Image (cartoon, rainbow, N blue to C red; front, side, top):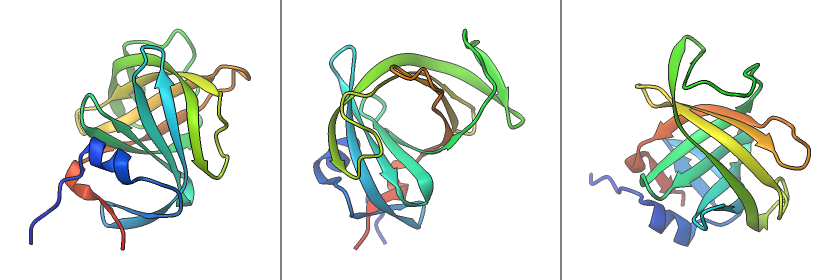
Length: 155
């Protein structure tokens, strides 16, 4: 059997609400697709899935993240390294993005913005510490980087 490798460009062309997304053999329903515009003009796609998961792409790295919202006690300024759930996370980057296009349920609203600080471990665990622009509420996510050949569209 030949494994199909999903790339970010193909994903962006086909993703839409109410379709099935298969990630590591588990099936999810896409509830909302949000196009976030970075301050530099580039963008990423964040999908809100069934079971409260969030799936996002990264075109520069041609990779995907599968995360769930969590609560952390980390405070700004965030350090270069964090220990979380017995893992050592290294800082990757910080960015700011605003929701530009929304499809599906309105979990995240058009015009909402967030600044986030992303971290990863050697085992590809992923931690994103976020702060919403308007409310200043924290929006932290924890999960992992998912291999491109572990992502497909369901039947």
